[in-house]
Length: 403
Image (cartoon, rainbow, N blue to C red; front, side, top):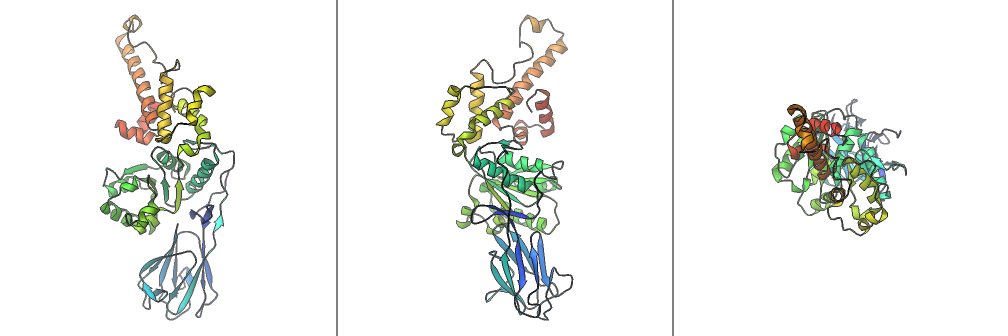
């Protein structure tokens, strides 16, 4: 079993997964040489003995400034000090600094230097993470990131084209985390605006902010306020954001609030399009067929050949539809065969109650199989489309051997 890590996971400039840490060191003033390691949560600088880094300087307030780790830097927040917090010659209230930087509190200078620790990638044999499957190098690396993210409660941002498995990844992280038994709530930002209601339902569990690229200005303001409360420890909720667009680019274009991005991107994972991992297609076909009730499906090389050149603009979601169509065009059938004929003398010869039960069973099996196929086996999305409770849909899927 891999070691459980806490703190903030991110990626270095070279693309490796790292556990972000920063050495905070006093380089001038009466407490010169004093240092502390910031590796999770926040750190308070001040002259009070209870401060995380106590600085014996009469120009430093008792609780002077607060440092917090973000994926792209260190947030510095002045705590209403008397003599101010400065970056260069500028007095700041809140600023985000790069991991290598310097600031001044009172007359003491503070040096911030990166002390990141590399995190090993997933082992080569890992071909599955929750509901996600893949044997390509790019997917094994994704599994490593997601496994590391599941071991902490840091915000997670999952980006990728439509149909690449972002929702499946979010749910798999939740199921692999210590919050697995708690609520898993999805807020679709393209249609919903009730941020507070969704946050309340997700307490103790995970809140997925879906379709962040469709975020409105009022929603962004509400989310920043919510994330600030979470960071102060007022909310117990793990936040996972999903987006079809590159949100870093949206920030640079001025279309997304920078502070919102910093809040969300503690760990950033990009789901690769299927055309960049075609070697995973046979494994995915077998997985999708199994979800449709055909765990022993065996396709010939001739049947799989078209997948090598298919564009897959809809990614895994499109592959799921192709598998369903293939099964419907063969003797295997697209779903498990109905328990009894839908009509005929055999049906008519049964008692009414028994005949009705068999018809309902046949309908359920077909309906649930088609529904899960459309949503790549994602119960939350399937239940939302069907207007069903997620747990009820899970019981139906298990009843008919689809999970």
